[in-house]
Structures are given as C-alpha cells and as structure tokens.
Image 1 (cartoon, helix red, strand yellow):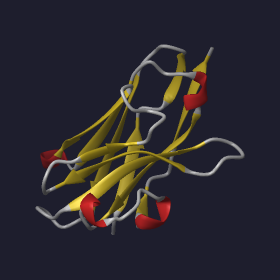
Image 2 (cartoon, one colour):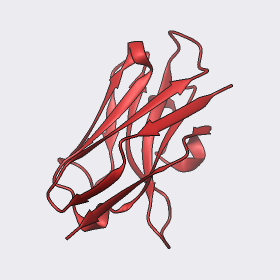
Image 3 (cartoon, one colour):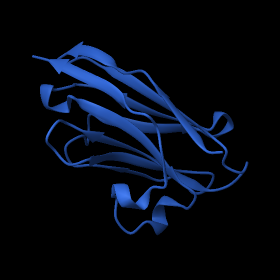
Image 4 (cartoon, helix red, strand yellow):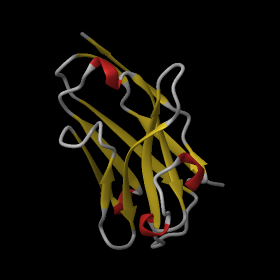
Length: 129
C-alpha cells in the first residue's frame, strides 16, 4: 500500500521561509520514481510547483512562479523529498500536495497532476502580507 505523508505546513509572514517534507512508503526499494509538489489555492487549478527524480539521475524542475525561491531536494535513504520555500509571498498561499509516480520524471512528458498516481493529504501554507 502506497502512502505519502507530508509535514511542515503553517503560517508565515511575507518574506519568510518554510520547509515541507514528504515521505513515501510502499514503493519498491531502489526503484526509480518521480516525486513532485503541487499547490491549489481556492478557486484555482492545481499548479505544479516542483518535481525531482528519485532513484535515478538527479533532475529537478520548477514552476515559473517559484523559480529562484523554492528548492526541492531528496534523501533517497529516507524516501523523503523536501521543499524549501524562501521569500514567500501572499500568492504562495495554498494547499500543498505531495505526489509520486513510479516512473522517472524524464518520462512524464508534462508536469501535470494527471501524470502522478499517488498523493498525500495536503498541507496548508498561509503567507500573510
């Protein structure tokens, strides 16, 4: 049974920082998979934030709105991915979801929710001005 457990959400003032963690269980050890972060604000579509390849070639990808401010990283031994968020803005306020799929990020084609098979429960990030 696949499970993604997120942690690290909360509230912060604009300009502040937060770090999210997501641990996946149920994937075969030493397998290659792609883990990503999405976010969804009320009334908006789910947006891709970043993804990272795990168990294979290290590669990362960022959405345009977070480039230069967010950093995604991995700890393969812990099956955990982190999202370091700096210089947070009020427009970063959303529910953030961790997602994973048992294939390399390089094979996804596009960075879209439909490409990911497994999801976490979501964690709220609120950035106040």
